[in-house]
Each structure stands twice: as C-alpha cells, then as structure tokens.
Image (cartoon, rainbow, N blue to C red; front, side, top):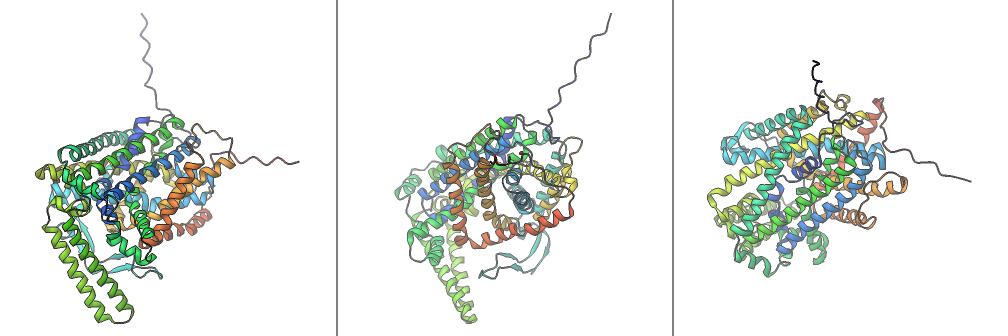
Amino acid sequence: MSEPAPSPPAAEAPTSSEGFLRKLSLFDATMLVVGTMIGSGIFATTADIARDTGGSGWVLAVWALAGIMTMLGALCYAELSSMMPFAGGQYVFLREAFSPLWGFLYGWTCFLIIQCGSIAAVAVVFARYLGVLVPSLGTDPDVNAIYQIQNVNLSLSLPWMTEPFFVLKDFVVTTGQLVAVGVIIFLTLLNCRGVQEGKIVQNFFTVAKTLALIGLIVIGLVLAFSPKAVEWNTADPWGGIMDTPQFNMVRRQVGEIGILAAMMVFGGAMVGALFSADAWNNVTFTAGEIKDPKRNLPRSLFLGAGIVVVLYVLANVAYMAALPVSGSPSLDNHVRALAGRADSSEVTARRLSAEGKEAEAEKERARAARILEERKQRLNEANTFDRGIAYAVEDRVGTAVVEMWSPSLAAPAMAIAIMISTFGCVNGLILMGARLYCVMARDGLFFGPAGRLNSRSVPAVGLIFQGLWSIVLVFSGTYNELLDFVIFAVLVFYVLTVIGLFVLRVRRPKAERPYRAFGYPFLPALYVLLCAAIMVNLLFVKPKFTWPGLIIVVAGVPVYFLWRMFSSRTPAHVLPPTPPAVTG
C-alpha cells in the first residue's frame, strides 16, 4: 500500500518587489489609518479651539473644515498611491514628481521631528494618563522626578523675533519618561518580529479605541446631555470670537480690521484640529506590505480618514451637548476680563523694557503675574459645568463630559481610554515610519543598514534607529515644542505632494492610474489653496512655531548634498522616464 501524499505546505504571503511580505489586508491598512489618526488630541484639543474662537459655531466649523481638508488630501494621495504602490509612500511621491532632494527633505524632517517626535510625545501622554491610575508612574516633575538639573536656562531665538521660540529652564527625568521609553522599546522589538505581530496589536487597540470614542459620544449625547448647555451653545454660536485673548493679540498685528483678525484667529485654531487628524498619510509608507495595494491602499485612505472625520465631528457635538463652549457667562466674562488686564500689563512691560525702563517693566510683569494667579484661583473654584469646554481642567474635555455623568468614573475611565488610544497610536507610528527610512537608505539617503530587511522581512535596523532617536526626544523634554515647530513644515509637504499630482498628470499622462482623484483639478486645487492660506496665516498668528519649522526643513538641504557626496548609490525611480518630444 502506498503512503498518502504529504499535504502541501501552507502558502507563503506574496512578496513585493522590494522584498516585503504582503500581509496587510484592506482591514489591516484601514486600522493603521484610524489607529494613528486617533491619539489623544480629540480628547483635549477642543478646549484650546474654544478659548481662541469663543463660539460653538466656530468650534464646529474648525473641526468640519479640518475634516474636509483631510478628505481632500486623502483623495489626492489615493491617486498617487494607486499610481506608485511602493514602500516609502509620500517620500516616493515627492521624489518622482520633483527630485530626490524633495523626498529627502521630507524624510529628514520625518525622522528628525515629525515621526520620532510624535512617537515620543504620544508615549509620554500614555505615561501621563497611567499616572492617573498609578501616581508613582506619572510625568509630573514635582512628584515623579528621579533626576534633575536645575537652572539649565537654555533658550533659542531668531533675530527678528522678540521672544525666544524655545526655553528649557530645568532638565528633569521622571518615572513617566521611563515608562514612555519602555513602551517605545517594547513596541519596537515587537515590530522587529514581523509585520504580522505589529498588525495584530494595531487591530486590537484600534478597535478598542474606536469603541471607547463611540462610548464617549454616547455619554455626551445621551447620559450627560444638558438642555442648559445646548441652550447656551445655540444662543449665539458665531459670537464671542472678537472678545478672546487670541483675537486681541492678532488685532494688534493687523490693525482694527475686525473681520480679518477673526478669520486669522479661525485659521490659527485650525492647527489643533488638523494635527489631531494627522498621520493618515503614513499608511502609504507600508505599500510594499499591503495586498493588492493599487486597490486597497486608496480604499484604506478613504475608509480610515472618513471614519475618523465622522467620529471627530460627532465627538465635538457630544461635548457641546453636555458642556457650554465658554463655560457659564459670568465665569467667562470674569476670566476674559482678567486675561485682558494681564495681557495689557505684559504689552506695557514690553514697551517699557524697549524704552530702557526695566524697573517699571518689572512692576508690570509682576502685576500681570498676580492677575493670572487670580484668574487661576477663580477657575479652580468653579465646578465642571461652569468651566465648560474652554476652561476644562488641564484641557481634558473628554474627562469633563464623563464627569457630568459619573464623577467617580470620569478620571479612571478616560485614563484607560486614552492609554488604549495612545498605545495603539505609538504602535502604528513605529510600524509605518521605519518603512520610509528603509527606502531612503536604499536610495543612499539614510544609514545603509536601515535599508536591509531581517529574516522576518521587516526593516529591523530602521526600527531600532527610529526607536533610539525617539527615546532621545523623550528625555529631551522638548518633544511637544518640536512638534509645534513642524506645523508649517507638515503643511508645506502636503502642499508639495498635491502639487506633485498636477506635475505627474502633465509629465506622465499615460501612466497607469487605477484610481483618479475625484474632482480633479478643482478639489486638489482647493486643498492646495486652503493649506496655503493656513500657512500664510500661521506666519502672522504663530510665528514662534512656523519659522523654526521652516528652518529645520531648509537645514536639510546641505545635509542632502553631503549625503549624496559620500554615497555611491543613486536614487531609483519607479516611473519610466519622460518620453522625448517628437520633432519634425
């Protein structure tokens, strides 16, 4: 009797031309988009937007426009990703549309700040909320410091700016920072084991955080619903913006043109919402590991970005169903009056200092400090409802909404929800970022070993480089400031990438495009114009953050030429060369 034939071996995952294993399905790619977009911003950013704009209509308009811009960007990236479904994503798009220099500048800024800074910042947020449950593991330097160097007093400024854009008074290492480092090390090593392990963690935590955000929406709309909050929020939804401290600051720059100042304040408020919805483009880095990327990559961009945009708008509606945007009118009026007085004293102090009257200037600064302390005391005495969204404790709007339903559950429930959210976000950022550096290394524009895949077909060395620099940023204590600095730079690269869509339509008209951007050329042009308007606005409204970001990008130019000088590799192009023009 003959022996039965052996069963065939399990089918291996198909391999991309770059050597990656295609193990990410449409669901996996969508979870990467959702998981990296939802971090901690949605739970707190609305407070800052409310303080700047002062009205429920403005707050919702900020989030709605941010959502529209996100979807417009996703439409454009969908065409580019279907046209060039290769690992490296946005880096490849910029390289093919313009030159390797522009791809390098994007990758340089990503590694130096955007990606690694995000990993560091989000990991520290995880530790901060762990400290709510286990105080000894928090990030409060007054409670959790284990090493400290006082009076470092490091500051950086630019010649045309009156105030330094970076100040470090003390260097502090906290137990929370060690927790953040542990999270980065654990998730980096996990992703070194393979994309399968990384995607399992990503899918679990993304589903969990999505359900947590849906739960918060239900609490706000149903369990914590307040007719009084709705009445106050709908009484004058477009009022209040001309009474905010931010409006007064902007008006000093543009004169008495109130409408212009209001629009500039609105544009500045967009930054928080756009950053809370950012990182949707990172999934393009993993194109080499997505099954049928020409179809599934564009679909994941649509689905992932669309899900998050809808959830974010609903979350803000839920916030306003439970809490007044600007708090109770009496508290809001009193707090704004105090802020105005403090601002006036600070302006006077700067004028006196410029005139050489330093003693009088110091008195005005002391007066401003006393007024701000009085403001803080008044807010501390107010209850959660009277504080509303704008003055929520430590900007924790999500916690304030849950507190309106169950005071005892608010802090621990939201701490767990945000820990789940941030853990999944860090994992997605770690998984996707290393693919970008791998492609750069293969082009001779990053450390060579980062371009090699390990036995599990993942760029382990790139993951380790990324993890090490992220850890440095954790201990620098400056990750939040660094992220603020690249607000302008991120928008620059979004604009350049979408302009690249126009360039490639002209230079590569016959290239295969399984998906074509909806509404071309009008909707992509609208996206470019909206981003450009916000960029110009930020130069005036938030110069402290925009100019340093631009300098960081420009600093990459000499680095690029040095790298090319010492590299024997030439960046490869994935698109065929432009055919010569037919003459005669």
